[in-house]
Length: 166
Image (cartoon, rainbow, N blue to C red):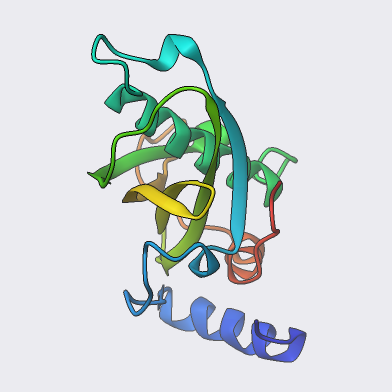
């Protein structure tokens, strides 16, 4: 992880270029690739008629990870609200069937910080096995205008050094 001086330099570059692309040079199935974590439990009601966790639940775990990540960045503390962001893109690659009972961990990683958007990589793990990976693009939208608005500089800086989650 970068030190504080490096983070300030990167934040200044972001302010001038409006974009940081962390790239795809990582193993999406490696838990060590994700600096932020959110824990959830598998519920019996999450199962489909075949006895495995329904595909919609995977999207809910990704949502839980994203919302927790944004909240831990301070998005709901006055600067921005969680409803300032919309999902512009969501993709999920299902890698294995998941079964009840158990605990899942959703890993979150920043891939790209743009002028008004950010792209996150997410993955769902049980123990150290990856069951799904995906991407989400969040766009900040103004309530009055309904249009994309720039991400605040302070949020961009926090995205470069995210908290660890739970």
